[in-house]
Each structure stands twice: as structure tokens, then as C-alpha cells.
Image 1: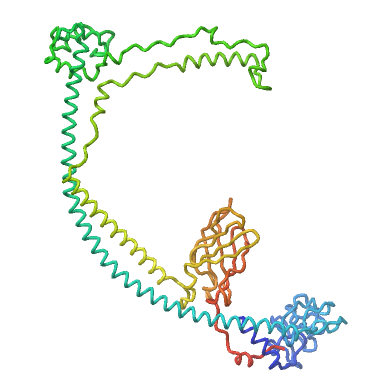
Image 2 (image 1 turned 90 degrees about the vertical axis):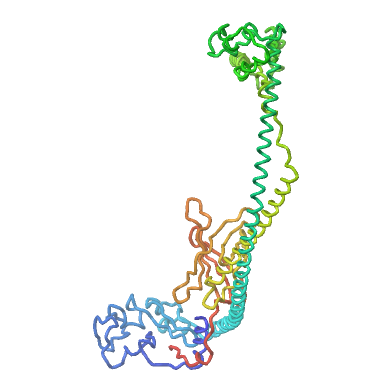
Length: 531
């Protein structure tokens, strides 16, 4: 489009031919205005004699009979603008004293001293368009290079994909072989560990049994107060915690029942008694009386009275008398509530249960099996990790190979690249086909302005616009999104950013990948310019 504009302007100065027609009529509508024949309004509403065209009176509803006067409010005037671009202005601006057409044709009867600036404007625009055409041409050449590089890159990726697929097949075989070795090594390891654990469990039973017998002997000696070699009903009655029904008192009958119906038992017979009482029995050593706390007379607890309240309290912090009394009462209550007797010491039986030691280290034969299994596991995990990495490489390659990088993959070079634009407040970062972000220039967290969504240009040029969606949500608003407009240029650079709507950003991104092949100069010289 840019090149066509340039060529059209160039042709104006080369092949312009003046075609006679009523004032204000464009060349494209010349055939409707034939002098000497009745004029039919362009909307077909009526037909009038030709001498009523441009007679400064509006006859047609669409204003088509007054293209060169200001008679019709809805009319339009065609500026020929020879040497520049032709154009239209509203009929109301005809002869209003202001020069709207660069060729001054709109002020033909106002007396305004207008200067014809069309050729100068045309010259400047042709120079600008010439530069743009040169940029477009250079950009298009770069685009062809990018296309060739993309083709080579695509071929390399396909070759690499095939190579990695072969590698993956070999790795899968290796992983399965190492899995078999691992499982084979783990089976004897498991059996050896189970044997070791069973031996330890058996050993713990022996240790517990020996400790239980030793404890039983200690308890027997504790209960045998008269040291006669027997534990009697009377001696058992001193331990009320052995009451079977948890009643008010531990009776002789209950004690005798624990002794198996006899009055006393020797150490051998005490074993059955011990089995019945060991869960409830509390050692006499655990019942040593705890000294009661010595109560200090209230008089000794009181602080010496002071005549100056400021000595007892910081300045401006002296409490009211009533509040002070209430606090003293609360403190007394708190002291009563907070006093608790120390918790009872752990019984010896519990200590014995927890003191069975730790499982011994594995014997040499078992340890060899464990080391062999661990070595097999390590080898399997390394191979499995390598297979996962290969899978990731294949997925990434397949994504790149199938990705829409343009009709000829001209945008592929942007993949995995990022471009920044720094403004007075923010640093904007565009990573094509990935995301757009914004970060405060002088420190702060990054804000996601959108992740890659799709190509969003018009149907005939869909790859001219990128759309990034689902960015960070705005406060009480939608998620941020960004539209990237691609412009032809020799460089690849992010040049501008704006926020036309809340949370919707618009950026301009220059890239040679969007440049189109400009038409030849020869074709433009033969185009006809309207005059």
C-alpha cells in the first residue's frame, strides 16, 4: 500500500492530463455530467436541465447538482490538487476564505490570497514515500533472507527430531533393561531386609522379656516389706491403684483375688500376679512426697509503702485507686489458678518399654545386597531422567515445527527472543509467541500484560497483528491484554506503546518479516492520476 501511494504520486508529475468537467467533479464521475444534456441527480431523485448544475441553487436531494458551490449542505467538492493527492472537502468550505485545497480551487470566488502548495507538498511526500519504499525494499530483501534461514532451521529441526527419536528408542530399551536389573536386585534386598527386621523384632521380644523379669523382681522386693520372701495381702493393700473395680477402697478380698486366692505368694508364684498388676502398678519410688511450697505471709509479699506514687509508676502512668485494687484481686486469682503441682514422673515400666535400643546395622551380606540394589536404582533413575529430557526436547521441537510462523515461516527468527522498550516510567518487554510484560523503571514487581494468544490481523493479512491475552487482572477490572501491530522496517525493534482502553495495551513492533514486495516503478508510471 505504501509503495502504491508513492508510485501514484510519482506518476502525477509525469502523465497528468487535464480533463474538462464541471467544477468540483472528480474524474471518476465525469460521465454523469455531459454538457448540453439533462442532468439526472446521482441518487435518481430528479432530472434537471444541465444549465442548473453549479447555479448556486440546490435541486438534488443528494447535492450532486452543486459539486462546485456551497448551495447544498450535504454536497462535497473535489480538490484536483495537481502535483499532490486529490481529495474531497465538504461543500460548506467552498469560498469560506480558508484555503482547504492545496491548489486553491475551493476559494475561486472568495478573494482570499491562497498560494498553490501542491507541487511542494507532493515533492516532500514523494521524498518521504521514496524513503519508505527503499526501506520496504530493503526490508523485503531481509525478509527473503529470514525465509531462507527459517527453511534451513526447519530442516535442521526435522533432522534433529528424527535423530532424537532414534535416541529415544535406544533410551527406552535401556530404561526397560535397567528397570529389570533394578527389580532383580531389589528382590533379594527386600528379603534380606525382612530377615534382618524379623531377627530384630525377635531380639526385642527377648530384651523386653528379660527387662520384664528384672522389673518383676524389683517390684517383688518393693512389696516384700518384711523381707520374708513373700508378698502378702497386707503388703499388696498399700497399693490402692491396683483396685480392680476402681471403687472407694482396695479391700483384702480384692488383694487376695490378685494373689490367686491365697494369703501370700513366693517369687515363683508372683509371676502370675505380676502379669495382672504391671499395667497399674506405680513404683513406690515414684510416690516420694513432693515438698509443699512454703507460703510467704501476706505482709512479706507487700512492697514498702511510698508516699510518692511517681516512684512506683512511670510519669503520666499512675493508675486510679479503684483500678489498682481490681488488678490486685485479679493477680491473686491468677496466682491461685496458675499454681499446679509438677507432673508425675514417668513410670519405670514406660521407661523400660522405650528403652529397647535401635535396630542394629545390617550385616555385611545384607549391606552388599542393599548397595547393589541402590546402584541399580541410581542407574535406572539416571536413564529415566534422560528419557524424560528427550521427551521434552521432542515436544519442544514438534511445537516449533508445527507452529504458525507465517506463510513462509518468516517470523520464526522471533521465537525465543525478547525486545524491550523503556519509557519515562516503565520498561516494556515483548517476547514474541510467549508473553508481554511491564516493569516499573525504578524498581518494583513485573506485571504480565498477556500471554501469546493468536494472530489477529484482517483476513487478507492475518499475520500483521499479534494478540496476547489473559494477563494480570486489573483492580476491579478485566485481565490485561496486548495487541501488537507489526510494521515493515529494516530493524527488529519495539517502538511504541499505549493504553487506548483500560487494561488493553497497543504496541508497534517493527520487523522485516512483515515487509511485502513493492511493485516495480515502471508499472506506477503508467497509472493515470485524477485531475
